[in-house]
Image 1 (cartoon, rainbow, N blue to C red):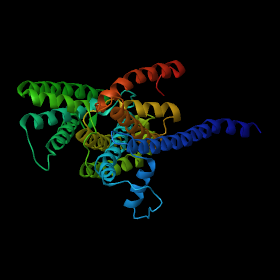
Image 2: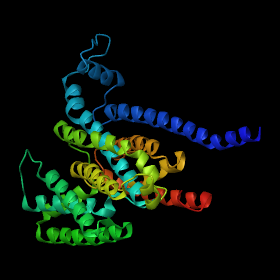
Image 3: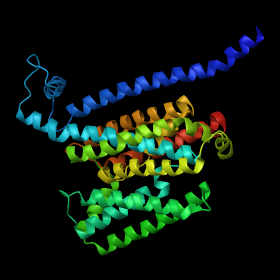
Image 4: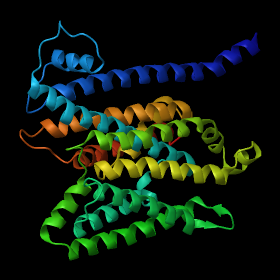
Length: 361
């Protein structure tokens, strides 16, 4: 009898955690759907929900005789402006949140995010070079292309520099990331100093982040990179759970820690680089979302990664909607908005976590 009671007590927290996970996933899905619909309907050109639904059904080849006629202007606005922007916000938010969750998993540190290994600073340097030099190629994709290259090269430089004797110490990796971030920051300052006034303004605006002007061709690139990369990260969730027990324990349980860390850094780089390349620097998504999800549903990484992807998408969809509507006739930089909201919110999360448990776990 005692054994049965003990077993029930031990499984109760796990059952409760799964219940919270289900509630969280359902809640995030509802918030995402509502946010997507509102983003498609609200703007300088008002569009009804019926027109949005009719437009979507027509794209699927379904008869919409019952739906109100939308008109050519509404169709063009939805197809070429709002739909690609909404889909881009979903993909970029999910990519940044998942990259942050993976960083926290391999570093075992709640403050880890893609920026610490040079993704943001490298992307900013690459984009600034393209802007200052006036490079144009690939249908004006020069800024995004050089931002992606800069992010990828800076991250690989951090990893290669920190690696010694076949191992990569986490502390060394973080310190190397700080050094590379400082160098990239100096390079960015030099480019801005050399560039003209117009280039400096464009560089500053790019760093603030924006989803304005998103194109379907750009959405396709982010989709092709982000979806399979996220799927691979979720497939590695079991190994991240073992890594949380410690490197030595994980190694004894069959995890090739160094290989896992290398693959994870490549995944993080791809996710964050493709997001930053097309949206600019959007702060705190990769830091706040995984941390909040971990507090709500615990450290099991499969649920954590899935919920983080949904949470990041929800956060960026609603933040982009707010950025478009909070000031009439203006489009606020979304990175500025997430930083203003995310900074105080993350401070509250840290205080709450420490008061409740004395730490991160």
